Length: 486
Image 1 (spheres, rainbow, N blue to C red):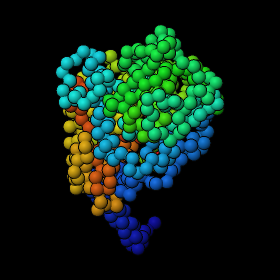
Image 2 (cartoon, rainbow, N blue to C red):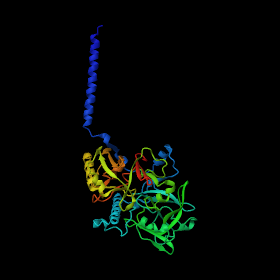
Image 3 (tube, helix red, strand yellow):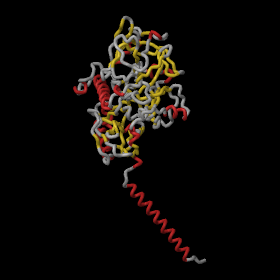
C-alpha cells in the first residue's frame, strides 16, 4: 500500500500545527507562572467598596431559598446603614475616624479589665488614663442591631447585640434621671402586665456583680443594676423580670434585664443592648433550656445589606467548621479562641505559635477592627504591602496605618487573607473584611496591632463579615462557615 506525497505533506502540517499549539500553551503557562498568583487574590470593582443608599435584604431571600427555619431568626442590620430603622440625621452619624477612636477605647477597656483581673501592674498609664474607674465593654458606633419584643402587650425595641456584654437592658419610663434620644418609644413598665422588679438580696440580684463588674446596690427593697462602658457610656436602673419575645414561637417569661432609669452615651438611637456573653445572666444562658446555649449570626458585607441572628441549631450550614472555645484567664464572659496562624496571598506567615499564645485571643461582635499581637501584625502588614506595591498609598486613618488611594482605578486586586484556628480550621476573610473604606481615596488594611504581644488578640466584626459564626457554648466550640450572607 502506498501513501501519497499529498497525505504526507498534510500530516506533517498537522504535526507542525500541533507543535505550535503545544509550544504556545507551554509558553503561556510559563508566562502565567511569572504573573501574580491571581487565584490568591480578590478582584474588586472600586465602585463596590462604597455602601449603597438602598437596603438589600439578601439574607432573608437566601434563607428562604435554602429552606431555613426562620422561626428563631432575627434580622441583623448596621445601626448607621440604609437598612436601619433608627434614621439618624447625617450630622449625628459618627465619622470613620470617630468610630475607630471609640473602637480603640473599647479595646483598651477590655485589655485593662483583663489585666486588672489578673492582677497585672504593667498596663501603660496612657492606656488607662482616660478610662472610667469601673471597667466594662464599649458599645461604640460600629455595631449591629436586632429588634425584639418586651412586655405584655409586646413593645418592639431595637437593641445593639454584643457578645462582649452579659446583661440585657433597655431604657425605661419614667427616666428618673436621664434617657438619651432613641428611635422606638421608650419602654414603660407600668403599661406591661408581666413586669416585676427583682428583690434585693435575691439570687438573681447577687448574680449582677459578675455580669456588670460593679458592686450591688438597692433602692428600698428593689435590686439596682449599674453598668459603665469604656467610652463613659452607662446605664443604671432597676433589675427586673419581663416577658421577652424574640419571635412568635420564641417567648420567654421572667427574663432578667435592666430597666434603665439613667442612661447616657453613644448608643446611636438604639433602645438598649442585648447581652450575648457567657455569664449566667446573658441571653444564651437564660434561654439554655431551649437553645442549649447555641446561637449564630452573619454580619452583612455592607451597611446597606442585612444579616441574621439565629438561636438554636436550626439552619446551621453543614459547611461550618468548628474550633475549640477557650476561656481567657479571669475573662470568663469572653468567648476565647485559639488563633494559631495567618496567611496572605496563599502563603502562611512565619509567626511563632508562641506569639499567639502569649495573650490568647477572643472573638467579639462589638470590636470593629481585629487586634493582633504586634509581631503578628507587623508580618501581616509587610506581606500585604509587598503585594500591594503597585497602588499608591494614602494617609493613615486613625489606628489604621496601611491605606491606599484607589481613585484612579476602576478595579483593583488585593491578596487573600485567611486566619487559622485550632483543630485545623481555616477561615478565609471576605474582601470587605480585609479593607476598611473611608472613601475611594483612603482604603485601609482593616487590622491593627496591640501595644504588646501579651495583650489579648481580638477577632473583630469587620473580619467576620459574611461569615456564618456559630457559638456552641454547651459543647465548647465556635464554628465558621463562608457565605452565610452577602
